[in-house]
Amino acid sequence: MTISTTNEPLEPVAVPAFEDNYIWWLAGGDGRVTVVDPGEAGALLDRLRARSADLAAILVTHHHGDHTGGIEELAEAFPGCEVIAPRDPRIPGVTRPVGEGDRVDTAGRAWTVWAVPGHTRTHIAFLGGGLLLCGDTLFAGGCGRVFDGTFGQLAGSLRRIAALPGTTRVYCAHEYTLDNLGFAAWVEPGNPAIARRRTEVAALRARGLPSVPSTLATERATNPFLRTGEPAVLSAAEAWAGHPLGGADAVFRALREWKDRDYD
Image (cartoon, rainbow, N blue to C red; front, side, top):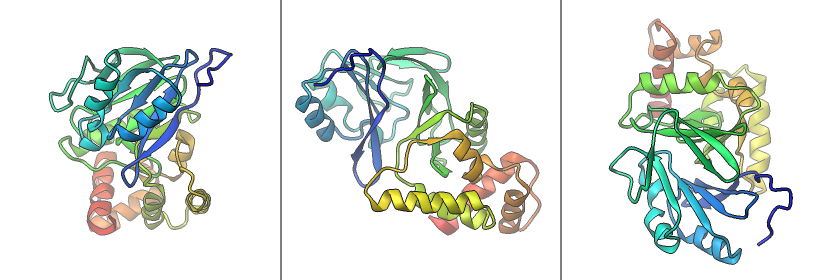
């Protein structure tokens, strides 16, 4: 395995899984590896063995099986690795449960744990070094569905994320970007930033390249779920709902239900 001689952490690498998941692979300067949301173990084990690498930690954002299905096999292969996850009995093999404000040191970075409920009630994200590992809370061009959280929780979590610096790099867990931007163009057909981004993402996907990470500045310019205060977004959401909407949470809910019912 090639180990950084600068002792600087490397950028996360997307390891594809299933049809559209990404498992994030983070190598620190010490050559030890951390992975994020391993829905399956096979591709990771092959990669670890090919590099003679050690698995230091598994970070988990939420309990869904496409994010947790590989934990037990990985932990069996690397019994010294930590499994760092939200406090949720539905997640197997957790060795270190964490929540809002906790600090995690791995992959050469200090990460702060954020509670970002909504997609699920116990969803967390990891923020460190200008990177946000956000699971299924914020997607490139979109956001997660509401499962056992609430619409209000998810709207609040997205507002919190949206207040981060625009340079923050957003590492979500799915390749949904083209689909999400199609919906964004329904909401804001006159937004040139959305049109440009659709073209750029289509070119990346045609070459077999991931469309993520994105930056928060890009999300604020093109993601309707972060643009609930924009007049054009409000107007489109009210037109779909068929009545006035009182406040950002109501606009968010209308957008999410619109996408769920008429687009997905």
